[in-house]
Every structure is written in C-alpha cells, then in structure tokens.
Length: 513
Image (cartoon, rainbow, N blue to C red; front, side, top):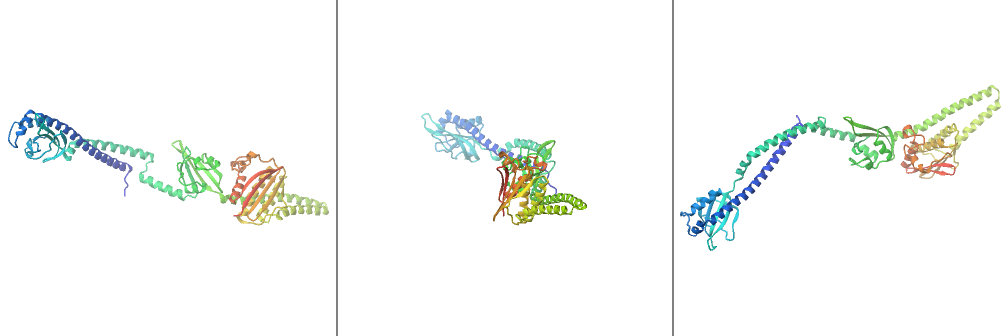
C-alpha cells in the first residue's frame, strides 16, 4: 500500500484548517450581522413610530377610528412606511387591537401598548419574527389613545447566508490557494531539513534508534555544543550511575567527576576513566554537519574485568621478568663456578655455592614464613628480586601474617600490594618496608619507603586518576594508585598516605566480602 507523502498530508491538514476557520468565521459573521440588523432596524423603526405617533392627524382621528373603515389615517401610515423603508406600519387602540395596518392580515390582531414610554425589540408576527418599535399615541391632554407600531421583518438564516455567500466563497478560494501553496513550500522545507525522509520514515528511524540504544552493551552519550545531553543509552545510565531522564541537562548538572567531565567535553581516543568501582574506556568524537560542529558523541565500554585480568597478567609478567634476571645472574654465577673448577679451587666452589643457596633461602623464607597465600608470596619474591637490581632492599615486617585466600581476594591483594611496592621502589632512596596485618574480616597493608615523601597538599591528589609525578595518564602513568583506591573501596576499605618520621607510609585496608 502506497503511503501518503508529507506534502499531501500537510495540504490536507491546511485545507481542513481553512474550512474549519471559514465555518467559524461564517458563524461569527452571521451572528454579528444579526446583531447589527436588529440594532439598525430597531433605531429606524423607533424613529418612524415616533414620527407616526406625533402626526396631528393620527392624534385627532385615532380615538374614533374603526377597523377596515377608511379615514385619513391610511395615508399617514403608508407615508411613514414608505419614507422609512420598513416592512409595515400600524396603529392600535388602547387595548392593543390593531385598527389599521399596511399589511391587511395584521388588522384585528393584538399588539403591545406602552403607556410609560416606547419599546423596541424582537417579536413574533403572522409572517415571522420582526424587529418592532411601539410608541404610545397621546392626545393634547396627555391621555393614552393608542399606539403607533412600525416593524421590519427579521431575515432568516438562509437569507443571511445567501447574502454572505459571495464573500465567503471568495475567502474560501483565496485561503485555499494560500494554504495549498504554503503547504507545498512548508513540505519542501521540512523535507530538506529531514534529508528527504517522509514522516513515516522518520518514525521508523526513531524506533530503530531507540531499539539500538537499548540493545547496545556499550554506553553512548551525545552532547550539543553547549554540553547538554541530547541522548543517553540505558547502558550509559547504568555504567555512569546517572539517573534516567537526564536529557537536556548539562554535563555539570549530571554530577560526574572532574575527570569524566573533562573526557566528555574534549576529543579523546581510548581514554581510561575510573567511575565508581568500574574501569571504563572512553572515545569522544566531534559531530560535524555542513562544516559546523553540532556536538560530540562519546562511546565507552566496561574494562573492569579485563583490568583485573591485566593485573593478574602483570603479576605473571613481573615474575617472568624476575626469572629472566635470575637466569642472567645464574649464567654469571655458573661462569664463576666453572672458572673456579678449572682453577681446581674446589673449596672456594663449595663456599661460593653455599653462599648463593643461603641468600636464596633467606629471601624465600622471609616471604613464605609470613605469607601463606601463594599468589601474594610469588609476587613479593619477584618484587624483592626486581628491586635488588635497582639497589633497593625490601624488608617484610617480622610480625606480618597473611593466610591463604585465593580467588578474587588474592588477585585484589596482588593489585594493591604490587602497585604500592612499585610506587615505593621508584620513590625510595634504597629501602622499602612491608607490613601485613590481618584479622577476621579485614586486612591492612602498609608499605613504607625512605624517599622524599608526599607533600601534604598532594595527599589526596595522588589517588586521582591522571595525577603522577612522572607524566599524565596518557603516557601510562597516574593510574596505579587510582586503581589501588578503586580496589580498596570495592572491598569496603580505603587507602591513605602519611609520614612516620623518615618514612613515607601508604596504608591500604581491604575487607572480605
């Protein structure tokens, strides 16, 4: 079935509006013409009736006049009717009985008489409604002797309509032409603005867009140049924790963090942002139409699970790096042993091997005696070996204790401890200390370094994403401590930094859920 075009729909609507308006105008015109006729005819009838009542012949002959008996009154009545141009004129006695009329059928009928003054109004006659004026006739002594009545027939609705029809037809024709031309021009303008699509196509497109936005797992936000929300997908509301019905609000009114606000308002590519307990990757691109920027579109996806996997892989990478360093060191040690054997210094060989074994056992024992969790223990052993190559020693507090956890808890512990240790090694002047204190439902991790410390003004800023003493988040820095805070808060705890004499102390608290 062929669909009606937008131009045809607008034309029909315009013509319907024109017809309705003309009908309303016609009704108002008829009502106004009726009121005008009654007002004008009433004034003319009253003037003619007053003239008739004041005629001396009428005042002299009316008391003795009889119905259908000719006297000099006929000429007076007919003269008033002819001069006024009204339909009829008549004389009545004091009882209201019509004695003389220009319309013979009215003789003998009853009309109203007025002793206190004249009357003008709409009345019923034998030939229909009429605008009538009644004026009392008084003799020389002021006694009421009858009434002079002059009237004009009230035109019917059909007569008034036929009278106004030519004008209404002209109005209808002019309005139809103007409405038709206006509809065509308006339809063309609308089609240009809607890229040539019909109304039904626009409706289908909107429905498809809504279905697509609901089906997208990734979040989508579109902003206009002023930073107001044009559209936001359901996933965007959920991922950013923004209430529904945010269309029309500015970014500042959404209550987002400064970091997220900055990313939404500028062009970015694969920008990582922490929102609540989620790690999101955002891409913001400008929308350009006819060479003019009309807004931006930001898409983002949840990378929380992937980040957890990356952290776990990071632990593995750290261990692998440490193993490669150990292999390189073992090569040197084997070369030393080989040289001693060739020199036949067998006692030196034994002492050298015993020394190496004792050092390895000391590091391993220091970790495994206090940490029962295999993942955390492996991480610490790898970090101690990596730090040694930077000439940084890592000590584990002898009162530290950590039982085996496994699963998500172990991964979160590795994330927090690994980032804090890396940060401490880079900031220290050669020494790092670690303390692990655990009770039934919480775990406190304290990492101390003897570096230059953290200025008090930056004590909170260092945990914000993007803050780093070595560069921005886009260069790979400014993310570790923010991730530590994210993990701690996700576990119902938090992280802070302070000072203990010569030591800078990072304290992270996690609670098992």
